[in-house]
Image (cartoon, rainbow, N blue to C red):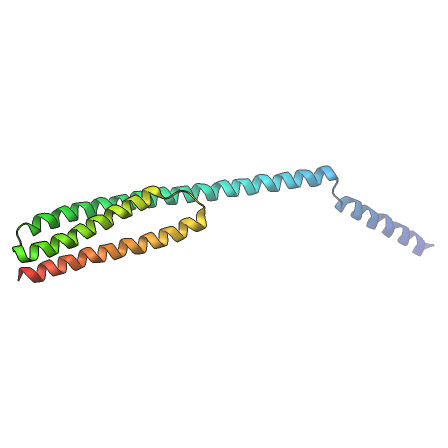
Length: 149
């Protein structure tokens, strides 16, 4: 008799646990809605970070391009004092750098928002190209210093 009471009590306890763990359809819908709301918040946060990163990078590159414009103007004024034989070569190089700087500016202005992955690829390539242009400016400076001697 004692065993049958324990069995019956354990069945009721097990049944209670099973019923308590089951979610009603309303509860499932509510949980799913909460998950969607959280996912949307995370997505909004990620999009905001992406937009902030893009805006900051655009400002940084605009500053670098403006610095390049100033450097180009400085080089042009230096070239005016060079010998005629060197002047044409330097002007040609300066004009090429000026065009490259202008192209970089247009490339940044024409970039359309296409998603974070494409932005990261664009940003990497653009940074590489900016560094190459900076190196070209340095090389031109080194040549100017050598030719002045």
